[in-house]
Length: 232
Image 1 (cartoon, rainbow, N blue to C red):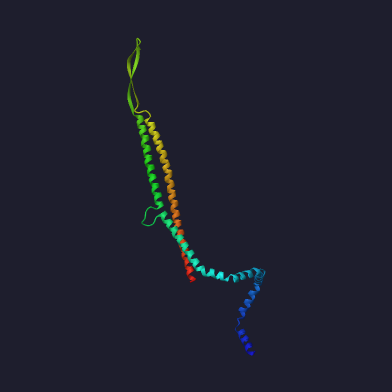
Image 2 (cartoon, rainbow, N blue to C red):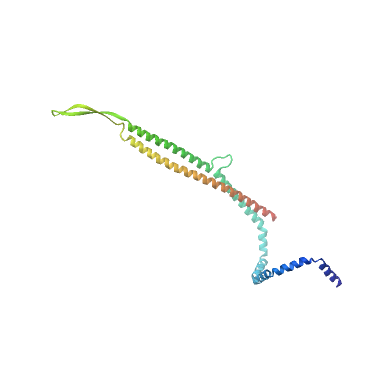
């Protein structure tokens, strides 16, 4: 008995009274929170019991899921990484890869530039046709028309009228109509060229976004695969 009393006295001698007092004060200050927590546990004791019983009744299935979790993580990680590779490949299709040609953005840019050059040539042709029509209007063929005077019941040539007539009637008008048609075609080509340029810009942005997403997916897949290896 005295031995036990000695042990208790020794324990009390090692007790930090200040820390013990602080602990008691903290418990007292938080007594309301502690009481609320205890009441919460008590009020939900049936639900807590059900959870405990569920884990007890299904411990084998739960342990099976936990044991399969590394393989599931590895499989999911590999799938995400492959999705990242596909996204990067799609990005390469849109943007092209180093040393390769034929990217969609390059094709749209080339088509837009080609149409822009067509528009310039058509505009030049319109100018040429309009100027040609104006010049043709200025060209006239000299004409001579006799003037007649009736003498004793007979028409007698008493003079000549000199004038000019167009070199080809209606040619200049047809040339102007053709110039107008070409101008309309050039305008349509210009609209298509602008649309192709905007499309190329959007495809370029999309390709960059796909490349970024692909990189993030690959990183995520690698991380999940690494987590799976921790369970082995």
